[in-house]
Length: 470
Image (cartoon, rainbow, N blue to C red; front, side):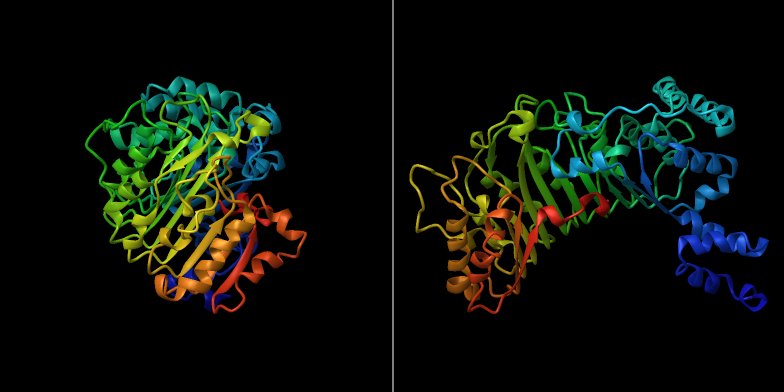
């Protein structure tokens, strides 16, 4: 042991990086020297399964950071995964109101550090300080998440589940970016990655807790940001007026956004320079926002992504509507206009994912199948991996699942070698038709790959655990 402790600090750190959290905790209690070595590793990566009804782990962690500010400098990553089974159902499309009950956790005491917490928040002088304190006093889980976050100056990665999405996150990031006063909160100068789902409610309302357009601008304005994965409500009108100077996310390489109107997306993409990965998911909820419509303009989307034409390598397109069993919206009310044919010229896209419903454009249910339409005309020419999904439904759509298979077969056997010569894998992602094909052992899907050299995978949405991917 003495020889190990006498090793150079860099070597000890490298060794301890490979030790499990449980063993690190045990080592930290073995000796004072080992405690000094293990503590930075113990706090560098915080990974918790969270429960809204039990904020105690977050409260204890926050108290430790307040009592020993040096610990905060060691924290590089915070990951808060949803542990509540009922909240995990939200990832399957269940309604918040139907599946997530309210909770009333025990209120924190002075021993938990409340006097220090309140003193710190009052000293910031922020306009939402009183609201923040009130939420802490009733043991609001999200108020403590925000308090912990506010004390982490060297944080690089922040990934949270539904339970941790809250009104204070947007306020914190806006204060960090737009408020030049000496409020004492972290400025998040080192933050490179942020990931958050949402909204937790089917209808987020006109003023969602997080994330509104100004919140998104704050995230885009962080100097080190490289990856944003979340959602954003649309501005009241377009074009959006930037609250300050337009953001300049020079390091941003990965962007995942849902709900964002294609014209607002175009404004955001026009500010990027190095984006390699884009995932855009349009979600329609009836009667919520004038820009949240039932019509998808594919031509406009192709125009919107033109600024990243030379850098984009990975593109995902998705569409969702509020499930009719919960929100009362009929899928037949959605429709698509135009085509994705302009993507053919995006020479650097290697990975591409989209619903079959938008790869087969210009829907006309009355006209039926059109033999001149080709799925491959909507694909980037140099694509290597294509994932097609069946997640999109509409009464305007002219094809059933077997007619869709015919289009995929025609592409693979007819034009794949010339139209998409770099293709090496196709993934068939089953969201709504898994049971339809499962009854036949997926033979209809497997058969379309017979006679080709293309690898294939069949993925079922119900087998995934998206809450673990936070």
